[in-house]
Image (cartoon, rainbow, N blue to C red; front, side):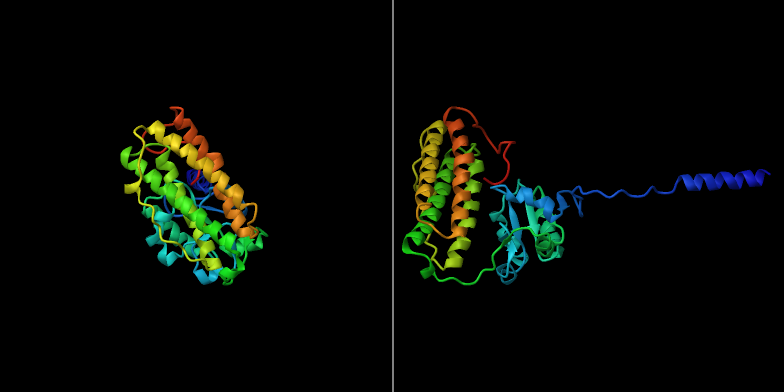
Length: 293
């Protein structure tokens, strides 16, 4: 009888230790280490639609040219490590490839380089397309003759304006190291150039030499005065794009111009205005910044 009771007790203990069924969830899952997560294309889209999101396609230029997820910019995996300065480290980076194998490898590169969050789009471009999400058009070489001279000059003026801003804000940081909002906004100016340069390549417009040297730019004596200069520069930038919208017809160029103008209007101008009023200054990056703006 004691033997029977012992056997029954052992069966009860074993059955009680069985693992409960695992519940599935749609929440992003950690892939291999802290800082890497996964999302489906549908989950990724709202964040990618934000004006200042970081969304990179790590396939080859040839694959990218055949068609890519809307708003993804091409940074091929084999050159990613050489181009990390084109991505903001402290902001989320969404990564897509054809399926998701190269995206996972890219995520490892980013977190190993100190990026805070790398987010793999599960299923890649195949899944993005299958979900019916918007695609960027397949790119075929386009002659600059497809653009009128006025639009070519607009592209060049936009690039030069972003370069001028970057050089000016770098000059301010040389005098006032780590000063906000300059330390945040200068990263945005670099990314804005990365949005413009593919348009030069697509329409075969020669990229002008960058002649803006921070060492040759005069900086005001106080940070508040420097911020007032920033207010003027951002207002001029907004007006510049308003002028471009009067004649630029190409949808992709208008989209990038809209993105850059919105950054000036919604992010940069308010930040410089606060600084010019004696608010929002200090050292380092502010905690409330959302995306490269």
